[in-house]
Length: 452
Image 1 (cartoon, rainbow, N blue to C red):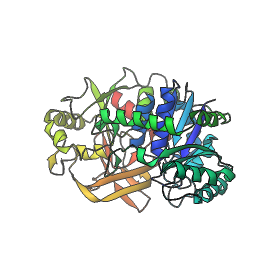
Image 2 (image 1 turned 60 degrees about the vertical axis):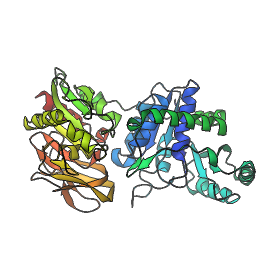
Image 3 (image 1 turned 180 degrees about the vertical axis):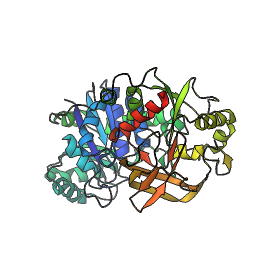
């Protein structure tokens, strides 16, 4: 039994990240073991959650992983924790476009049987807040809104009016955060600046959020609400099942799989490294901005998402590593690259030389490409057999030309039919972000190719 609650809001920009991260940090400062989670595919907020709690921030995405995996993945992350805080996505009832409640905060709250704290931006309302809260609380009777935290409150008088209006709603006010005390976190073209790029400032920001929430919220009441959650009644997801489902001893010697990290490559799901390790790999992180060589004995390479466009000159300037990556790829070793990794393997990014593994040029674009995708593997690769179907997510402001190689990685079915990505030798490179927990055989296949 893990005490748990979901932090939701009527819309984006209401203050979910402020409240969720502040609660995580405040609970952790009080000596509780806190499990941090984020609804949806977002990579950046979980970095702040991890900083607040000292544990990996984990995503709960019902579109990418399916509804059946949400509670097991949650239980895996929350093992040996006192309380779990789940930050929602967008407005509480907003989900995958045209898919009803799928991947919404409300759906995840129901799958976790977790009470919800609704964060309301109260900056431009007083009595109307009661109608807003009533509407959200009554829309879906299976969603239990257990309290409200008022954000951007203007004054003591404003707070008094808001509390009076909510007295008759039946939903208790668990806190009020003043407008003048908002903690600012810098943003750019894809959202907040990741923790890895501003570590010292991020530490200060999270500490300030913890203090803001401690002063403005009734932490005991919030914790009591979390502890009111019923038994979840599911077995925790276990990455070791990847090994259990395979023949004993298929992979021996623990081949080294190098995983790009550091400020330029911050987008990854914790479960990916766990699955690689469970499949028999020795997972070794490295920083392409600093390290001039791949980890000793590297047999495979994973380069996930991030912001190579911000660090293109530095990545380009690390010529020894670029050559090492190109040599590894040319040898036929397995290489899995997603989004930022795709750009890093190209000939150039915004005119700066990259690894030159792919015969393609990448550049920044004014257009944001964003959304869930349905995909099928159209070329045999180190990650997937032809015909493998899964769901993924695209999130970038770059383009690569051409968009697909002679052997594409994926055939897309949403939002339009197209092929995308590159498969050549052991390389699988694509814009598509995937969650390997939904298809754990990909990690097993990748490690087997590394050991072969």
